[in-house]
Image (cartoon, rainbow, N blue to C red; front, side):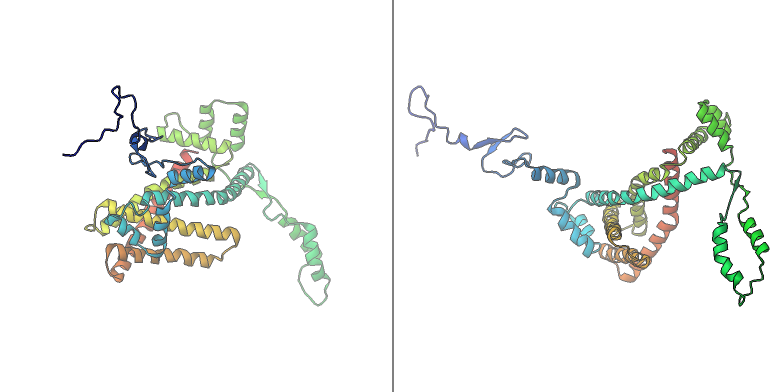
Length: 370
């Protein structure tokens, strides 16, 4: 038999020990578990063994951790755009570490879209606030001038016609002055919000109790919880003169879409009852909605640089319907004609019933949370 080799020295006290083997052990800075040296990543927690914390590393880790922006994104993005339905089919078949999770892809792309769209919303919100503010101001006027015709401008335009002997207008100067007076005559303002806005503003300025202000709006003392909530929100709407109402609506859109997406998957489950679990249809829906957000982001980005004609925008959005047909054909493995019929029915049900109801609920929730 061979002789065992002792790593310690031959001294009786054993003071001289060879630490050659122990020097091959490293301790992970993250999980603090020992492992053999030479690993690029810790075999226990996966953190890189030797990584200098630079600005580039910090930025990449932030994006990677919150949005999973790594190699899997590019491997997922290309088939998402060029091979409708194939990415969802591969993910459901078991290739899940190779591609980005559908919910993560949806989250990342939707965040990018809403970030870009927020700049447009500011512009729309300012216009809406101005219109509502003018509506409040107009309601408090007893009379308004609809035409606001400038007499000098009328004279400038009509004088050459009246002085031209070759043109017979049939209108004398006296009749023209009478017409000018008629056009500039204020008319009674019939715009009414259903309550005395001037008196309510006086109560607000005087610091009157909330109940007194709510009664002026028309709320009864025995009103239920939802009615009271509605009147309180309307009072807030009046006090702010509608400023920020569109922002409240915009803030509810991401949450609403996250609710609409499972409903979209549920409709697919009804039409393809025997084609997998609900989760399989949900995967398909996540990837399709991600594609929609990519298209909307591209349209929005291009329109920031160069205004695209509306008919081109319409054709691009129409192409998403064709994409859905091809995606359904590839994912559910049915012929094109059957896929066309089912997608048309699904789209009709979704746009005719689900989306309008969701918009109504979204507007109501936006107003209640305003």
